[in-house]
Amino acid sequence: MSKSKVAVATIFGGDAVAYVTLALISLFCGIPFVWLILSSFDGNASLFLRWPSPWTLNNYIGIFVREGGARWFFNSFVVVGAATIIVLVFAGLGGYALSRTNAWWKRPFLYSIILVRVVPPPALIVPLYNILLTGNKAIESFVRTFIHPESVRPVMRVVGLVDGYFGLILVFAAMQLPLALWIMKTYFDTIPQDYDEAALVDGAALFQRIRFVLAPLALPGLGAAGLFAFIGAWGDFLMPLILLSSSELQMLPLGLFRAFLRVQEIDYGFLSALALLYMLPSVVAFGFARRFFVQTFSGGVKG
Amino acid sequence: MLNYHDRTSWQLKLLLLPCVLLIGALVVYPAVYSIYLSLTNASLVGAAATHPRFVGMRNYVRLFADAGFWHSLVVTFWFVLGSAVIGQFVLGLVSAVLLRRPLRFKNLISSIILLPNAVPEVVAGFIWISMLAGGENSTLNRMLGGLSVQWLQQFPLAMIIVANIWRGIASAMILMMAGLSAVTADIYEAARIDGASPRQIFRFITLPLIMPSIFLYMLVSTVATISIFGFVYALTRGGPGNATEIIGIYIYNQSFTAFQLGFGSAVAVVSLVISMAIGLVYVRALKVQV
Image (cartoon, rainbow over all chains, first blue to last red):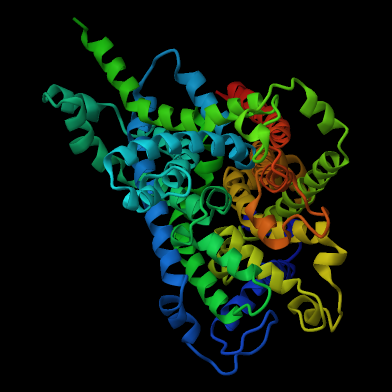
């Protein structure tokens, strides 16, 4: 052991103390999951921690057979996936522009992104609902003029701003965009301008430059931005709560929540299995995103 | 005809346009619109639903005389202080410092600490409902040797703080690790040669060097904790009574349960102002650094 490591080691006591402390913190972090995992395999799961008897996979199979499950997954993937794609395209273009510009508005723009990021989503729900409701009426009357009255509702479920995929997609994209823009701007800062200039000399137009030179170079940045957008939107509960009401459009967070509220006959095994599958994509995404995590806090430091 | 320079600057603005439009329409405009709404008697039901009237500062007068509002501010304050400022920070810093050592199972330990951070809000709520359920059979009661405490009924605020600490240790830990990586081995070496004790090294070298990270963490986590809604809502829905009605839940309940959009917006404006003030401190700090 080097001297410096000895110094680190003795600040908070010896290794034994370190192991005990870390074990306690890990227990605190890990134990709550035990119930979720066990009861998802339990044929008679309850709200309480118990050893599964009988062990079963029926809870998982139920997700694809029973009402809810698969439908909620599908809706979540459609909405969150579409929002993530919008975020990637918009933030990729915008981040490039922010990184390359030297205009007077660059600094103010960057600072306003920080201010936009601190806006608490609960503070926006009322005006957001009003705005989307107004937009929804406009879209609906537009749809009505072109489409047979009977198919208006199914169409509105897709293009509607309230109780429709489209509105929620836009809202998720808007909520995740500021962070993604930061990440992309910071990332493009690390790509030398020589690349743009070389492509420019070769006579590439702006969109050719983006498509063939910058987009491939930006892939790692886009990866990080996409992961955080996905995690943020995937876990969000508030926006679906405000904006969705049709059971056909129900997404995982709200479906789980509502199923849990049916105080009588809660099927804990089914809900645990569903909750476990629901958290899986964000856990995986978080595993990949982990090394970019610091950027999400301190992206601003480089100005 | 535009010269090359003007043309590029025009192109860059065009590239930024989609972001500006989307964020402008669905974040900035609603934030401004909420100020207008807070000055009306807008409602989800009744005559005011179709024709809201301008009522001036009436919502704010009512708000500042409203015990429920002050209660939710106080609950939010303790929630932020207990979970983000103290709990997550202390446990995160301790974990970060200890995980710098060449220990076994380092990756396993840090993965376990990171896990709660990746869990969707509703699942986290679901998990803690089971942990904290009342009766002798609940997980926590059995771990504590057969108590039968109704945790969420008897200590609601303390419990949402504990559960939120659980969710957030990881973010504090990661940020503190980043800060600590600035404290290199040769700095310790130099301090040791000068005869500094480990305690002195921590107090006079490590702590000052990670101060910027701590400052950053405090701002970011305070703002993030004020924004929490889904996790606490899934766990307690603000109850029992209004014991865990943090400001996000209060806004939701006033607007969508009590249908008073105007009044709810006034609460929203207050939480916007608080968050903006913290955001401005952050921006100022950045200006100093740049």
